[in-house]
Image 1: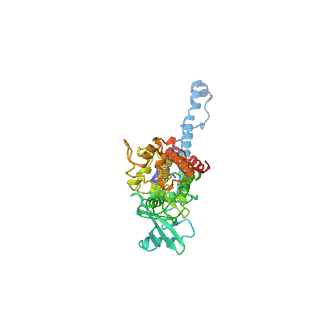
Image 2 (image 1 turned 90 degrees about the vertical axis):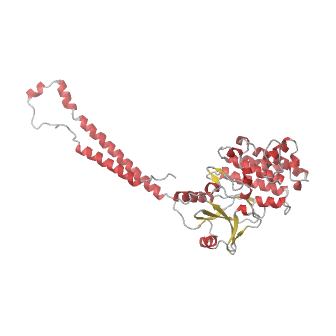
Length: 412
């Protein structure tokens, strides 16, 4: 939305003064330098003595001041029209200016704004606000019990240092209002938010299984088993959520911060994407690129972003490729044991090396091997992951193509 001029009163004063000066000049300027008609008729002898040249000069002389008056009058009318249009624009901008909202903003009738504010601000150490089970502190999600039967997940976001200005607060409000309109089974629903100084509290639907990051930690620790059917369901759900953001919602949206801590799972292990587009308002951003809240998550950033390139929907696809590789191998992307000669450490390079060496099966999580058909599906999924992990964005599939590719895995 275009912003109003810094000093509209000064601009109006200058326009008005210009019009008054021009009008005064037009009024003070005589329209004729000499009378059009003589009070007494000229003697016939005088008329007969005029040459044709004198007659033409006498006829054309009054036209110059007339034309000047018309020109100045037209210019004054043009300035008056500009002034009128400017006043209309000011009225339009004022009436369409987003009002700054105080207190909680709620998008669902099930949440009482006063109860939400009281729980978040009056007593932060209250029993109503607890760490989500199985969630790591880095996830920053807390469980809030508002009423007897209402639980929401609260994401606490630290804002940029300049977020206290009115213009920045309006941008945050507009961003969150647009996010509240996102409706998809694989996108986390925004239920409410509270903007307080340098903190932003965001209320989402509470999902019992926590994040994908926490789930895979439990898998690696042997606390829970996760077969290929569930893992492929999670991968397909993430891809469907991306497709919705990239192609189906209006306006289209890139996630900007796709990583395992922002993939939340319900009791049926259906994934939902959280924090869609929120990187623009948090201190985790620098310009247009996410720099990560921990070094661990730098593995999910596409190569073009590390090289100062533009973030696109294909950058989200790269992040998805890393998560698909994690689901297939069960490995931590920052595992220092994944070492490839003449290359940096990391899951992506190790996976490429195993594929090129013809040892792709050796890279799969041994806890889910056994069924021959499923092994073939996993090897095909690994090829999909490697295509997503291409260093060239144009070589990666779109999220729409990705959904189609993953959906066909079970049909082979």
